[in-house]
Length: 123
Image (cartoon, rainbow, N blue to C red; front, side):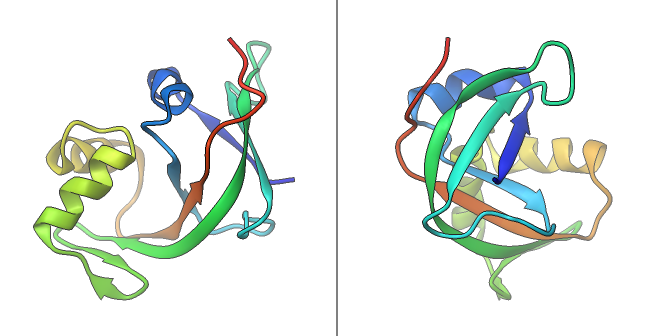
């Protein structure tokens, strides 16, 4: 059961369908295409709220360094970086990288997990 917890700022983006991906550290039991993914706010807290469920459509390897981004070991162009950042819920790649530098240790190796339309959405 792949379940992912999100910060409050991402909830409206997920519910509206603007955010249909997440970047996560590699882990055992990561979502695979066809799996149902369970999306939550505040998992493992008393405020835990289910955002909804969706079907994983794809996963890709991602490496984020101080000055580059690789998806499936291919360096991503600046334009593609902007598209990825917006799809992940950030206004720009610069803002996304600022957030990553504050919350993660670089280099970061993980997965991008993509999903389809949200179902069983909760208020």
